[in-house]
Length: 292
Image (cartoon, rainbow, N blue to C red):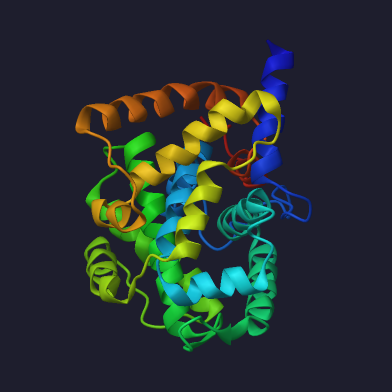
């Protein structure tokens, strides 16, 4: 059983903690940007919810033609989708659970990268990854999907007040990256995303992004069925209107419920196996009892 546990944990960490990740164990006692009592630590604590939420976030973000153009023009996303997920996971984990110095280092690095991402979308519209309005969209799409996944797969009873606290806390990361007028509550996030719908599009590259997600590679052959399940669960997290834009055949309520149960079952061995995830190490750094 110990061999199996280590094997599962290694697969999880291969996705969630690539080389160059924060040192979650040091310095002792450093609470980072949020600290263990924060809503951000709660929402970002579960690997399964974060992975499915991250998939949904990517697809929602890419419905906006300007972030989509930036990703296609300035990254190797098409050839290395798993690498992009790893880099996103590294940033989220580091800014959530890392020390303040590590979080600020990661934010500064991403700000520097954004300065180099400029271009023109296929329709002639110029874009810049450092544009505060685009940063607001990317952030809102991301955190809304993280919370949807946490509510569906980890904690359906997460109180409304804590949901609002999560959005209020996590806004500081978007603002540090350069976003402005960041929505800070559940209602503000929902209203903002609804208001953005007229700007969203689905074209050939958006549909290719969906295809890449549905056929994402796994860290190893044994993890392939689990990876496919997580990718499809991420798609199912999207709002109905976003699935319609992507041309996804929506599941019936019964099939969606079956998918949710399947993901919940698949999450059990992940939670059992992982003892050295970002939150586990961060709690050790804070001198707290083990997570879980």
